[in-house]
Image (cartoon, rainbow over all chains, first blue to last red; front, side, top):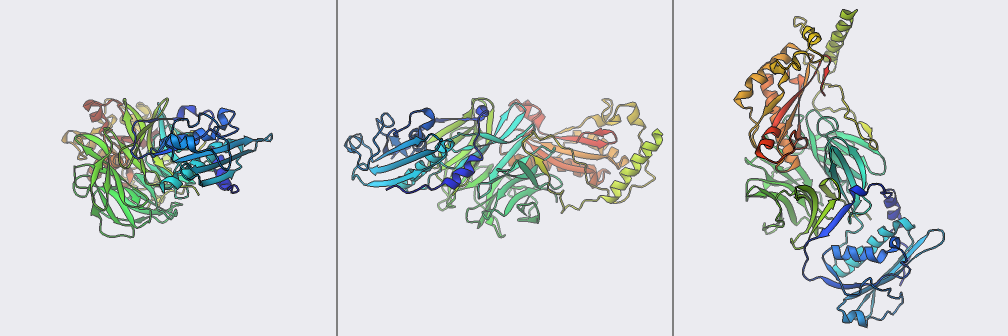
Length: 428
Length: 196
């Protein structure tokens, strides 16, 4: 069964971003340092027609699946072309332990128009599980491969794939700061803002088209919103004092920010164009790092109202804040999974700053890293992986960990330090 | 001629001070910057205004500036006013007793020079959350500002902001480096001296 193209529109949006040549120094290098249990064994055959490196859609699919930690490539994957037929011979793949076989064809015609077709079969029952054809322009082959990996991941795990999403992070290279956007696998990295002054706290708008962030380009923290298709930044919070910690409300129309215009660091809501600032909460303490739950019902934030920084939750519409963290004297930087069940944050334990995960129902806390300078956790939109900043050999890197702590990856750049990651939303 | 220019400058400053009071619930219009080029550190004119027109009895003394470069006593190494750093203890934001004379000197300068504007940038060491450190640096800057206002400066003369841990003076990771980075930094816009 071959369905006509879908996702071309999205791919068009993606194209506006590509053209990352010349930014190789900002390219993320990914290293997997752990492994999960219960991985699904899968066979990915080399696609017919993949005659050059640039055409290796099957390799991108296989890399996505293995990097997720939930799949294991069976022996022989990618080694030979598996003929693209309605009834492939499944016996040898079954013998190698594969639950499923992916095969396909990549072709580019004389005008440069590409076609990618793929199918996935249940290796035991022979039934076709998936099959789609895409007709992207040749430069969008990677994006097409991510779409296919997303479909496979969702079919076999039941969870939505995040291979087509993007991440933002800050690269510091000497005195130079680059707010960078890349594909979730680190490819196509390109800066969207370059400055000689620090940039911090990027967050994606719910539609994935804009970033809000804090820049010190005017000698103080100012919150900017930058639409990514346009090379413009708009100061949305530039009040007297410091303006920081933006968090997009799920409606995309409002941002929570921290302002000090009335003294002290306090939570405010503003419209996305910078108008209509109003208080969300009031205290004589530091209130900062607001973040909304995906359903918009709750606001999580850091406050030292109890004498030391701890994480609190209050109804986004206003109401009494309740404290969520009790162990230790420094718990900061809350992040919340899309289903609202898991709180990730940074805990200081014995002088070390480590990523912690709390099940909000049972209030069980698990430390999921053994590093000492973790910062800025950000959930993948499917809630399965947390991206965060840490130090490795004295250098800032990004790292990703599955919520059970089993699969760990580090993402570093060849030159410079990486920090302040933010995982973007689903883009459909 | 020279005197005329100076007078014009003083008059302009007084007019600005009288006209441009900035209520705290308003912000500067959304500014649009070309994000492609490296944004320069744009210096926007401070829009804070004095609560009342300056008292004509308080003369602005410009003579010191002409003898000592654009900053006058503010940058003269022999003057306490050239000392611009106030250091803080770990995770604290109260101004230590030893820095009281320094705060007093700056407060007196602001009291005498009502057209002078001050930016206090609070800083922290590298440990912990970036945003929480922005908030902690803000508390340090506000503690310095509060003390200066008690000692005679006008509230509207001083903007207290925070750079958190983002602009360390020392990049090292020892206790000595951290102690150097836990500080409030004083900058002036006064006469010909434009530090922010």
